[in-house]
Image (tube, rainbow, N blue to C red; front, side):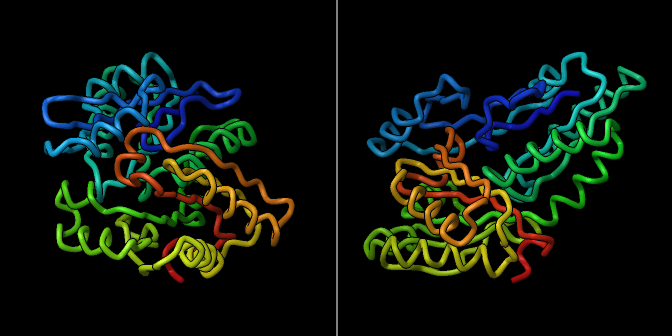
Length: 282
């Protein structure tokens, strides 16, 4: 069994699991940054901040997904939310073509309705389910239910790249920068990103993040905190979680290229288990 994700999962490998990451692309004018483990994210972010060129992102094509599937008999492919990317469409087309050309082989493409660390949690859980159940179809059914009991919240200190991609108005991005606002939000039930509030300080933003997690049912489950050039804030959130739940599995790390592009400097994405409450219902 192989797990294949796009690079928005931030994963580069998985312990004891056959895993591949299919790279997203960040474009700056005529330059392309392929989101592989070799990408110098700090250099990419510096280049973007220093440039006035247009920027955009692109998802892997059908061919890239087919290459990643290789010759495996069973493949699980959780992907970036279809509300923000064409990953789900491209991976689904590739899966249909692969199963048509390889009768008896199975590919399950899951729209994660999320990105980053929530997608990471889904991939990790599927590996555990497959080991426990020893049955691909049963693990696929179980992961559908699990996806409904995880959540994603985020803190952003800049909306520049969202504005450059037409996802928010330039006026809002300029206002956020002028007022030094921290935008706190979450992934909604339909897979879109919802802004929940604006905070004038990092401390208030972290408090709001923690409140969002608790309101959505967090009670000591797994948490994955991924940041872009903001290790201090990530560590503070981890301390807050462990003060309440000392035995919680809370891991902190850096965003890769695609997530760093949208989170920008100071941004943070938090994937967490919501203890059975459906995501985005608080």
